[in-house]
Length: 465
Image 1 (cartoon, helix red, strand yellow):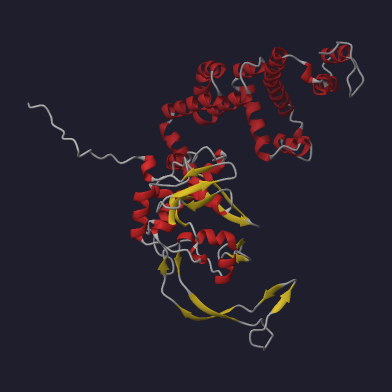
Image 2 (cartoon, rainbow, N blue to C red):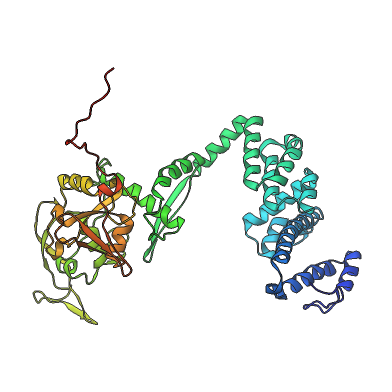
């Protein structure tokens, strides 16, 4: 790829000069030699290489990366053994690495621990990394055994783990080390799992208009959650372009919504927990304006709340607009850039809560639709909402002939305008799903599982025993 006499783009010295510096064990020369080679590779036009050449280069660089990791561990181990950091203001090798190389505390600590373990206890693992036959990830899995089962057992297991590392990926080696830990020290392995359980925690926060979910689970809880979400992460059809993280997020919300809809959760303040919003009737009808959510304080468009209201429990409240603070004129309001700002609402009367879609209607929809009506969607009735084809705020009736079942994904995309749903003229309870590119009959329960009936015009007889 380059001549041995070519100059380094950084230093201007030749590769022969750098090789001589390496032979003299010059630290500056070694670093310049490394950077000189990398500069040539990074400045080269790799598009001129053939597929075979790119394969050779890629595999060679990956292996060189493994060997580079071994060189880093060797340098850190030698630096640590020389106790150089103790004479500086950083005091420890870990702190020196943090400040001089800008590594995070966790990475710096792991680097020092691994370098010491390879130097003092696992030289065969270091040699395998130096030859490029295993990766740094393999080495991390093997060196962790020392802390789990002690040096004696780790040294005994090293040849077995190295042989496995040369043939399999790091995750397999980690499982092998976990098995070793459970055999050598079952009580310690159980204690380690218990310690992980005690570190569990989930945070749910809202910043701006985005909600953030972050947390740590023990392995048992993670497996339970994965098992619960996996069946709900299938795509809804050929038009479903969601990514895997999006499918997982939607599945998590589906599980929560199903639990909320079951009505079995404990009451909070005398009510079953669920999403609660307050919206002005005109905003719901015109889909103009925004509504502020109670918990997060985030403002969401009235159009979104309209989608939520497709199948909701409603409590009508008759209220009068109050003037803003500091004014005395009845009904007065301040105006800012065309937005009328009042002083709030004075409730006058509260009606009885009513649910738009009755239980009987839901049962009928489940029989007729069998799940989401979007063509090709596989979502079952347990994960669908009732949707008004003509919204009730626009005068649409809450009748089965004006209702369909939609999964959460297709409910959102319908209200977003990605597709439309219209009645099939002359066929009560049947609908057409349409986009800019196609029109298809909406799905029904018969499309999922056609009913089977006996043809009573023919008698069916069996053979006599």
